[in-house]
Length: 346
Image (cartoon, rainbow, N blue to C red; front, top):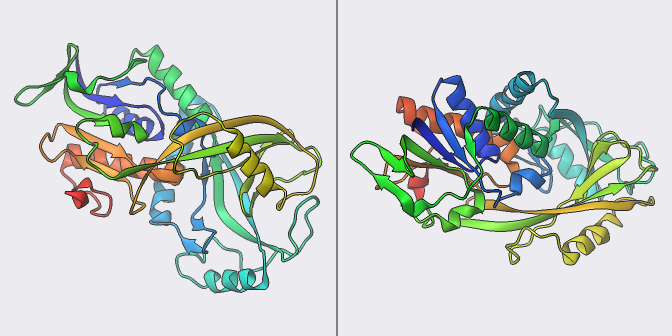
C-alpha cells in the first residue's frame, strides 16, 4: 500500500491536516488509538481575548480568518452544525475590573471584540454586582461531535485504522518511509501529550495539564451566552450547561476525579446561585508548551517526519492555521512562523 502521508492521531490537529490533504488530492492513512482525549472533552470555545488580563490572544485575527471558514466548510461537507456563535459575558468582580476593561477597549487589537458599554442588567441566578463586559466574535465548536463525524467519514473510506502506532517500526529508505507494509512520503504526528512517548520528538518541551469539566442541568439559569468568571458556564441547550475548567499539572490521567469535581462545585458557588444537578464529568490532558506556542515542523535529522502539536487550550482557533502552515511548508517550501517552528528548541 502506498500513500502520500500517514497521520498519527485524529484530534483537531490531525483532522485539520487531513482536510488540507483532501483539498490537495493527497492520499493518506490515519492511525488513531483513542489514547488521547483532549479534543473529545474540550470546551471547544474560541475567544479572541484573554479575559483574565484583558489582552489579545496571539494572532487571534489571523487565526479566526482561517478557522471560521474552515468550520463552515466542514459543516457544509457533513450537513451538520458544529459551530455555535454566541456572546461571552465577563462578570466583573470590582470597579478596577471595569476600569481595566475600558482601557482594553482602546487597544487596537481588541477594539473589534470588546463592547465598550458595560452591561449592568441583572442576570437571574448570576453573581454580577459590577456588571458584565461583552466579547464579540466568539463561539463554540462541538469538538466531540466533529471528531466523531470525521472518524466515521474516514472509516467509510478506509482511511483510518484504530490501532496503536509503533514508532520503532518505521523503516527509513532513501526518500521514502515504510511502516508495516505501507510506503509513504511523510508521517505527521498529531498525538497530543502522547508525543512524550514518541522517540523522535520527545526531546521537545511539551507539558501536560489535566483539565476537568462538569455538565449540569439548571432549568432556572436561562442564559444564552457564555458566562466567564472564575470559571466558564457554557449553554448546551435544553437547560444543560458545561462548566469548567480545572488545571492540574500533577495528575496526568484522563480519569475524572473527585478533587476536580469538588473544585468546580466550589468555584461555581461564587458564580451562580440557582439549584442544579451534575449530569456528567469529563477529563482530558491538554498538550501545552512553556512559551504558549504550538510545535510544528520537520524533525532535524529525519525530514520525512513532521510534527503538529502543542495547541493548548485554544486548539479550535489554532488548529486550522497551523495545519495550513505545515502543509504549505512541506508541499510548497513556505517558511514556518519562527515562533511556532520546532527549530526554536534546537
